[in-house]
Length: 143
Image (cartoon, rainbow, N blue to C red):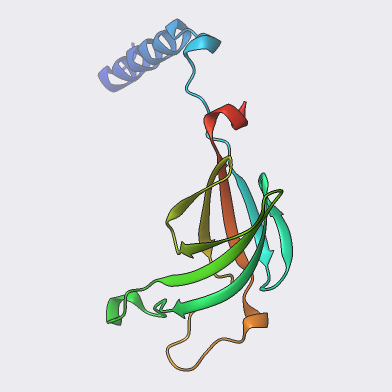
């Protein structure tokens, strides 16, 4: 005769299996849409690159106040750069703050990484940056 713990285990396993088999797949029309976005890594300053549906050139760093050790940081732990959008209408400058998205033609653009670790003292040479930018198209462009 099986012991009490093995009976409980057998009942639990049977109940779990029955619950899994009774779950029906969600209809395609009710599924949550996946966010569409485009990540471009390794972007160098003064290099023209395609990020999603826009072409950009990173041209300036206003400041890089990222913290090497955030627990001891007295700065804002932020980075502010400017990029030029190349559009059929001409060139447009856009300022990007680390982690904040900005409206651009057809969607939003965000600087997500400098591509180089922060330093406490001194400046980072421009050629050391390998920016990561994310483009999130508006809904009508993502379909």
